[in-house]
Length: 115
Image 1 (tube, rainbow, N blue to C red):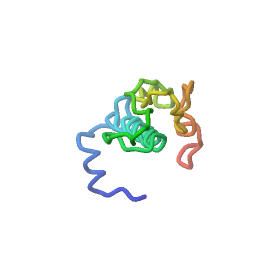
Image 2 (cartoon, rainbow, N blue to C red; image 1 turned 120 degrees about the vertical axis):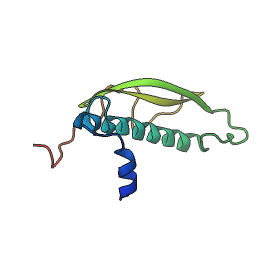
Image 3 (cartoon, rainbow, N blue to C red; image 1 turned 180 degrees about the vertical axis):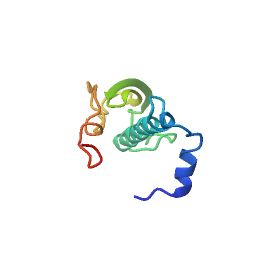
């Protein structure tokens, strides 16, 4: 995947200090939260079989039912996520499991950039 220079420039607007990028309220943490929420929404779309903002297929009783907040803990501290729900509670995310309190796989894996 390639991220365009224009997209990077847009994301980095207003980033002037290291804290703006890496701090508790920095861009990296915000990106992690937003990407995870986007993936959770895509998982619910796949589960329900229709896009957010569209009508559910005729005869399907299960529908979107807002979100609930879940706080995950990771190397970056606490990360509040808006986890989507469905009416019959049959949605189970592969990314964030029920009862999960930490960020599996994102912060725990060793990286070639870290000792």
